[in-house]
Image (cartoon, rainbow, N blue to C red; front, side, top):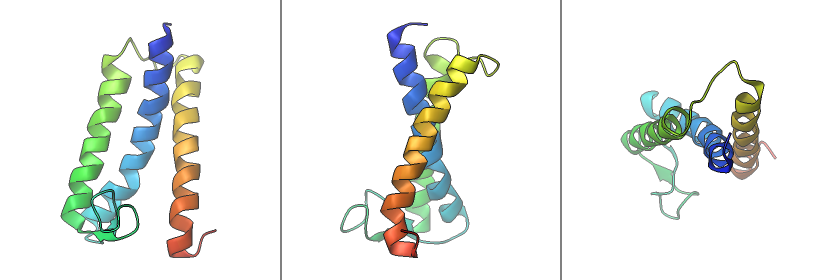
Amino acid sequence: MRWYQHVAYFFGGAFLVNAIPHFVNGVSGHPFQSPFAHPPGEGLSSALVNVLWGSFNFFIAYVLLAKVGTFEVRRWRHIVHVATGGILMAAMLARALGRFYGGL
């Protein structure tokens, strides 16, 4: 495995996890924080903006996981990189969004 595949799989996991709350809130019709809100990351964006932002994140995750190298679900090293990126992104989202929703 080349060095850039490690990086791609790590960020693929991060983009995959970041896509979930935006997409789910968007298709549920709820406004949610996004980089396009005012102020960025704190204000609420419309459901449509979040569906589009979540879809874009899914697309980037797909490109990083499926098009860089040969990602194999059964290779533990590949899964560790994706899981590490995903868990770190999830922790950052929990910390950042927890102040808005009573988490942290």
